[in-house]
Length: 180
View 1: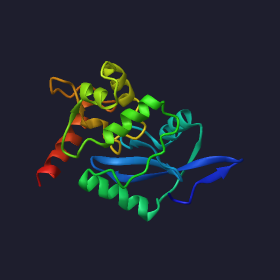
View 2: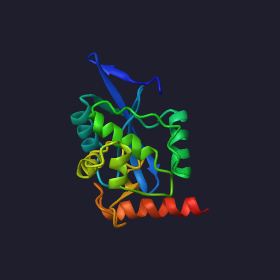
View 3: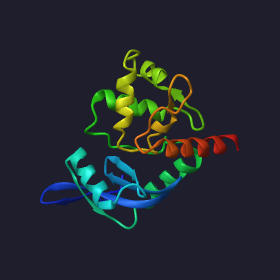
């Protein structure tokens, strides 16, 4: 991806950049395999994000002031269109079930939503609705893997690891863009 993955003491190190996200700053971790993490910069510090990223991936991370132009452009395109197809993700560390759920989220068209039950059916586990919710709660790349597009069967927002007001703002933003 970036050709910039470093090694420290023989161990790979992801890079982390802070970029403008759709509703505020976003920490984005990446390496040669793809985007490996993201978090809302107004909700977590760089140090905490780096620590959580390490705990999840087992890899260290170093801050960079500028990510590669091609990656930045692909992320910007995804924010402007809702289309995530030009992004690559490093989902190592997720269970096969979690990865299937996260990939199914990527198939939800921008400006639309899906229910937890429909997502469970999409990953061929129709009785695993709660497990789908848990997998979404463990999504390591929020916003870019659009778990915010998943709602309860009754149409209510359900949960969101970063709070329902953020989920609501993301959905409103996508709806406006889709209507334009």
